[in-house]
Each structure stands twice: as C-alpha cells, then as structure tokens.
Length: 151
Image (cartoon, rainbow, N blue to C red; front, side, top):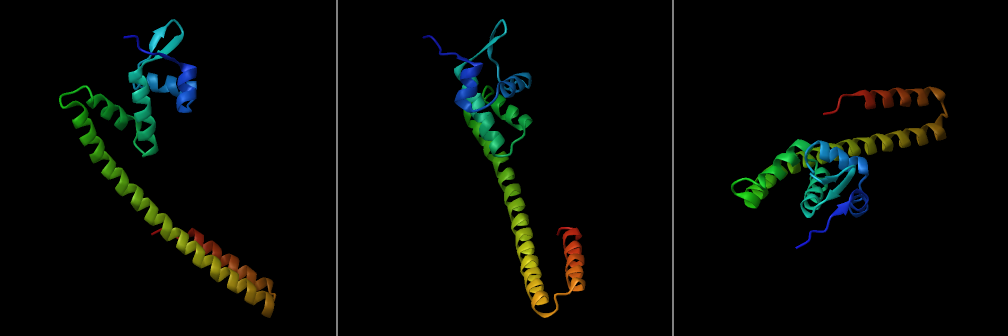
C-alpha cells in the first residue's frame, strides 16, 4: 500500500499553520517528516500528531506535556495509557481554566460596579456642580481602585 505524503505547503494549508511552525515542531521532535534533500514530506502519522499538538495547544497544554503524551502511544498500554494520562492532565488544566474564569468574572463585576458609580457621580456632578474638583476626586478614586491589589 502506498502512503500519501504531504508537502510542507499542503500541511500548512490543511492545518492552517506556517512552515515555521512545522519546522519548529520538527526541531522539538514532535513531528518526524521524511527528508528528501531540503524537501520535507509528512506522513499520515505526522498529520495525526499535528492534529493532537494543535488540539493540546488550544487546551493549554505546553509542548513538553504534549510530547510526553504523544510518546505514550508507543509504550506498553499504548492508546489506552495515552488517553488515561491525557484525561488526568486535562482535569488539571480544566480546574485552572475555571479558576481563571472565576477570577476574571470577579474583576469584570468590580469594573462594572466602578463604572456605574463613576457614571452616577459624573451625571450628578454635571447637573449639580459641574465642578472640576469633583471630577478630580473621581479620578483619584479611579486610580486607587485600579491600583489596589487583586484578590
């Protein structure tokens, strides 16, 4: 059976990556294209590995984690062990992503609250005083609000 090989250009088009990205993954020993002089030819295995690399990157895995997971495929236990380790690692990444999301939601709520207070003060200051002093006070409070350490 003849295996279909893809050129670097075909890989770039198929996976929406740059040639530099493919060469980088090759230097990191994540991809192993066949070399014919300067030409790189990518096998079905390379395509499968690149798909997993890109998926891992989207999920926040670092390249070393991805390499270790890819290498598990060729050990005792093969695909099952690889999937089990990937799942364990994914649980940790999901927990961290949820923590970051919760922190971001908290900061967004704080910012919205500040903006509502600022708008109310600005509207009140314009209708009652129009005072530059009051706007200066708002700026001072704004600076204090944004320079407070995050919780």
